[in-house]
Length: 304
Image (cartoon, rainbow, N blue to C red):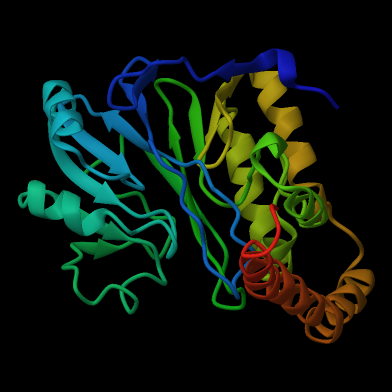
């Protein structure tokens, strides 16, 4: 299924990374890539972005903030008053402290698993259920993908006035041109192209029914535009295109009879610990520890 004609490209030479996607919603395109270190995964260079939504009272909702430079702050302040700084999951939180210092009157909102990880931050509230937050109930909708039975939860947000749904790590897409040959193989094996990565799928072995219910909530919103945090494109537009994109990205959640679901859950659980994690460890060990050291030593004697 090919959606290339419908992806809106990221415009070049953008000042400070701020791009208007639709009325009252912007992305902030991070200038640098972020790399998660082994043993979590090989050093993939992740492009990433923040989302800024302006509410009717001129306050700003900032999701998954990127580094805050003085130049970017000037542009942000022109849009409105930063009031809400929000983390969609326990991974996208690195720059919340900097934004909180810059905007001490803003409220910090955490995803369910984040507070124990960031005890240095004073969170106003942890978003633990799908009950709408009164501060933005009429302008931003959201639902949680994940339960205590999974290893990762993510809050997916929806901006009704622009018809925009926002995913963070549940769907990823990469530009293979940014990778070496080994990374091209491992990213495809990990289904990191317009799909939910395999690692996240395996983190939800026993709570897939809850994820299906959350996905149905997203379908009920009937989004006309989708933004994901990690992609080489800005957004995908068109109600039917977005629906097809989501159906393909979440094909691993297609319902099956409960007996088959139970058996497959047990098989996945065994496969994670006996097959996938050992292979993952060996790949990371070679790609990010052994190979760089060998290459460095050989470079003393040969041109590599």
